[in-house]
Image (cartoon, rainbow, N blue to C red):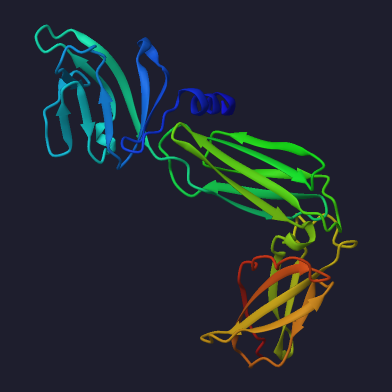
Length: 308
């Protein structure tokens, strides 16, 4: 599909500054498709070989000149075309009604710049890059995703007809200063846009949040809470690739949370708290040697301090 669209762009598509339309390949019944951009002027020409003025119809209904339609001889111009103007256009002999030519008009937008982000959630196993287009095109749009490591190779990662998706890079090179480059190209009959995203693996480490976070009162300890959690389920080997954790906690009706950082442990006792108060807690994970970014926060948990 991607190759087909490039062929359309290279050999069939004619971009007009004034009309912003392109011709595509024939559809059912031999009627060609013309692609136009919403909000642009679009001019259609009748194949009446010099027979003068023609009658234009949209879905077999006669078109009359109006504020957004201009008729000039054998030409029809749609001013600031909107989606209601999509359909099958035909031009006819004014006397006999015989059709000279037909064209199916589809309206939309060229692709916007793809937005690309890359993270290593399962370090050191892989990197996942996600992408999405910044706009809805309303036209058949193909995306092709490739990646390269330095100049050694270019690998295809994904080729889809959707507006967003993911690309997983396996067997990543660790502790290298040579960047990876991910290229996302979106193509449709009105044009194409590309984005290149470069990264060093260790700089884009971002674990998922810790799981099974709980906080509970400690019997006979009116100023302490016990906080427990588990490493992210997606983190491959927390005993070899260590994690540290950031604890955020705050008292009910307070907008000033406190932060604590702990290393390579999955429990912590919060101390010096206010008796009988209700506290809220969240936990985030980060690579032990501070590479990359912290995870998102875990779901909030809460507990009230022990009271006799």
